[in-house]
Length: 505
Figure 1 (cartoon, rainbow, N blue to C red):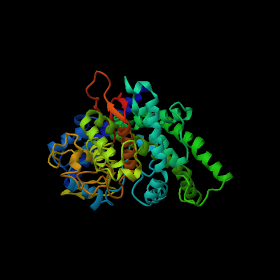
Figure 2 (cartoon, one colour):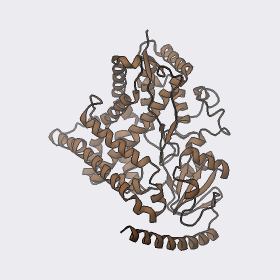
Figure 3 (cartoon, one colour):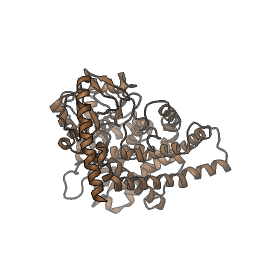
Figure 4 (cartoon, one colour):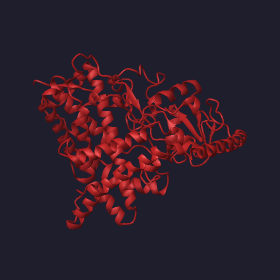
């Protein structure tokens, strides 16, 4: 059986080399392609570049080949954009042409080949999904409806930390408690539910399945089979695990949350006072025939990953930078005490009165961007970008991290210095009003979660700084902020142990 597979693989390789050579010659005549390393048949640049296409590696290639470059990763064309002008072209000026999403063998499994909102192709289905998700999730009305819940969840974190004697001495891994907080923040919106503790059996199961989904999807391990289809048989075991995790997650969402909400709605009609939770709105769209049950479950899948994990990473980065920069932490605490008064808990409306807090959040999102390459774009048809031709169905990566960390555009970008957003960059906002700074993207496919993430970041960081002096563990002068990059993500490699000394006020 193994010999037969090897024989088929070798024959496939030979045929693919012939086809690739012919196609390459034809394309060479037709297209003026962006610069990049010289590809070889079948493998393209994969043998030179490897699987690890993280933001720093792609920055190194940009320094060598320029603001737009082409990597031939097996049969995939990967175009990397690294300048504000070209980012504007992809995300705004030609937002329709480059508005689709490329997927891969793993994301096809987790999104049902684009039945969600994040990874669906640009078109009628995407517009419908975006519209259905906007009202229950991404409006100022939602922020005002749920911000009291977010404030209560942050207050519960503070109380739990104060009750734990380890937190003020040896320190605790605060992320674990913050993860529960973020699940509660989003599950309040989605299902009008919350989990009482980290030991809640349903929460433990949910967290484990979501964590496994993130690990499998964010890994670079499967790239070889995605880039080079003839190697895909070797991914069989990996893809089988992905499908099992996908099936278990969707079944859990259905059994414990979606179906439960349906039963509640059937026995107790929802009021028309605007206090429905998100799933009620989404199920109404299903009842009207706008979407099917799979779409409903994939919307829940998107929120579990996109809203919860990314915001949690940003909170964790913000805390780490405040621990490692005690003067900035002290300055932020002084601002909150001065504006609100000592001991007055920060609320969502207060975050808008605290410019230094806003600057700390912006600087965290600049230096430690949760999605440093944004979610990949794709052109369905042949297109132009700059002075180059971009073949149809190319994967377009905007290196947003490098846009925000390029010393040609930013003064001492390697420093964590919130003051830059009060001084030389005072007009730059996180909403994409400046193409050097795109933590949430911009344009049609930008991340709508910005409207939730920014207030949650402000409330959480504000409450922690108000109540604690945050320090590294005994014997350490700083936290380890080594990065762990994934297909799209950027988070801390090691979840930090932090000492939280209650303030004596």
